[in-house]
Length: 265
Image (tube, rainbow, N blue to C red; front, side):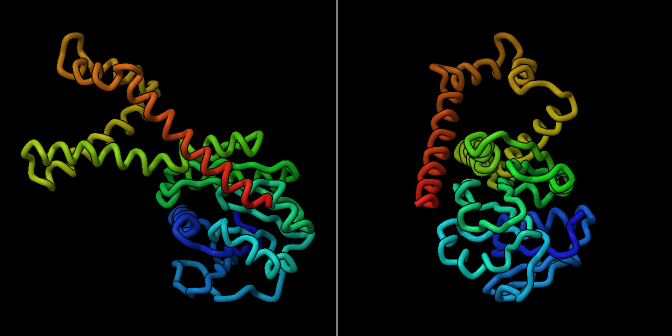
């Protein structure tokens, strides 16, 4: 699934999650080299502390986006006309990547989320200069990590990232709120934590198997005049939970726009 040689330049939390997902899915990682100044071991992957003296078939960018101006000058000589550049740098748009790596055969943006480590993630894909065969290979590889939709624009990729990329943190915070309330009301901490976790896990599994929209599932759980309906009225009051999520996603998009502007400058 991976080409003969591939690099992952800066393989931190998200890059490591992708590699872990591929390893668990049985992807051959023997041709992958992680370029990491720390030299931290990554299961199944060769790790080096500096850029090798060669040109890879694929080069993944996984460092902090604020570091691109410092890293690109040293990396660009190794990204030639045979190299596909794949970036998971938040906020760094296709045009900015192309400007910094002008000789790359093609440029691809990837926006994964952390559940890719378990093959249950989402990776948004975007490119405007990738041939069909390479595009198919990229999609097949990232479908090993979960859902991998192609986007039409940087804006659409940012939107998907604001929902799916950041979403695990928002979901985790919401689930934690249930655990906190459970503890406040007298449940043992381990019981409250387990109840919150199993409730969200079971709900997701039920929705996936049934194919129901979440709104329909909520209505099915809530009997008319029952306890669940009473709680839903609180969540739905004044468009409550939807309005909150709308603000959360807008905040993430604003920050992405700020990062994109910084990368363009």
